Length: 374
Ligand SMILES: *Cc1c(COP(=O)(O)O)cnc(C)c1O
Image (cartoon, rainbow, N blue to C red; front, side, top):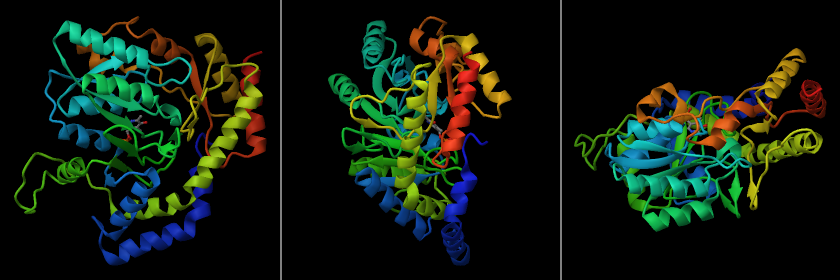
């Protein structure tokens, strides 16, 4: 059994992928070919925003807009600690300083109450200037945007939605990728919408910001290609990856539906024995991960061992919250600073999640998890 099954999906779209990739190969337009414009148009339409700008990875999709905000080392950008490392790393790469925020115990997402606390503490300390917030749609569920955007407004902060795991999800009828000033996603193969390598996209309704992002994406280019007007990066998406994404986007909605079917089946069968993930406030999750919470670290170990014995793969996202990572030691955080995410890190585990899980797979997975609880 696979944790994520990309082979069954490939067999479903094989002919279309080969035909689209072959068109790129025959055109020799490997960089910024017509597939890029077509994909960007379709992505913008999907997310319901004015601009979608493709780029080389989900990390660059965060770094590029952050570079647009011209951060200094004394600028604070608030970010959850319980997320993939790149959510915070991108702030440091763009010259700012991450300030870590605790998570909500039921949704695993940024806690609006703790965001309030972190902003107040930063202002009281007076060393850093609050500039922005990166929210994360963790495991596929959009963050609590009404609360977070109100806090951002109150303090005049920009908001970047990290939708690397959330693209395809919804919050109160609006699609992930449409929240905040700018949003980013990743097309890493294991994400809900993945390509066959690295890729990403940036979304915004702001025309000026879109122009700035396009310039930074290609070495800070100005209207004259050889007059570079700012420092940028080489952050383009390959035409071949855009071709793959056009194939995958055509079946994406049916896959989101299938992921929700699998998640519902898991929740029905496991809610009597474990804390199952809660999707709150009229959200639609795209289920990048299906994450359960064991009673304690020992129970988690027992479940993971039982799954392994039954041939069921599991994973732990994330065993170390970023504020306790070696790379950010110099910021001086210690155990106990963000108690909710520190506790989650000891107890969470994820079971296989992809649109092609069969009833027999679900049965086997649920039985293995329950075996670990005996
Ligand atoms: C995967 C991921 C990223 C980074 O995406 P890459 O394409 O791997 O660079 C950023 N944020 C989150 C929350 C992610 O899951």
